[in-house]
Amino acid sequence: MTKGERMKMAAGEWYSCIDPELEALRVAASDAVFEHNSMPPRQRGDIGAALRALLGGVGEGARIEAPFHCAYGFNLFLGDGAFLNAGCTILDTAPVKIGRRTLLGPNVQIYCAEHHREAAGRLAGLEIAKSVTIGDNAWIGGSAVILAGVSIGEGAIVGAGAVVTRDVPANATVVGNPARVVTRR
Image (cartoon, rainbow, N blue to C red; front, side, top):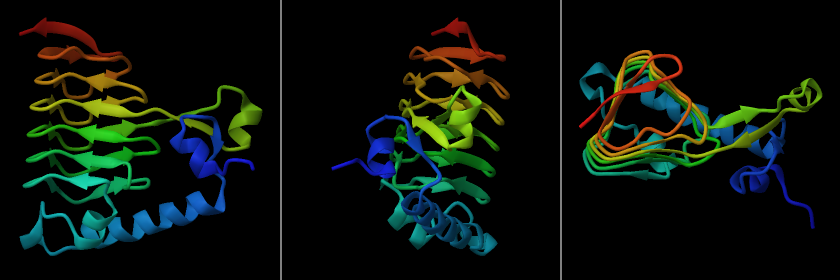
């Protein structure tokens, strides 16, 4: 029996994102995100019921400001008190774990998918998914980009606009493109 594209994605193997099952899952996520992003201003930061049901896990007091976007939702896990500010985009083709009391600034982007390096592979929709983990009490500055396979340690700070291409140690501060360590506490 051959593996379906969703099973390949979950196993960290090359898969085609041009797949009816994956498209249906993205549409379901889009519907839940639309509901969340359409909530009245007095409910800002709350997580809409459909989005909450879709997410892999939502800790107590976790908040997501609108607008928000995710690819699938079921791979996104928020710790207690995690906060995602307006404009965050999470392409969760693999698990994304955001720790307790971790703050994501406006327009933070997390990308788990890597596209094939060969043009023919990209035309076939080939991707590979790599998880992203952000530890407890981290702070990710506005418009930072976190790439596939990266782990950010507990208490780390990622400066605004940084592009994180490799792991960040606990209690370190990284800035720049590509992000580099400037201090350790």
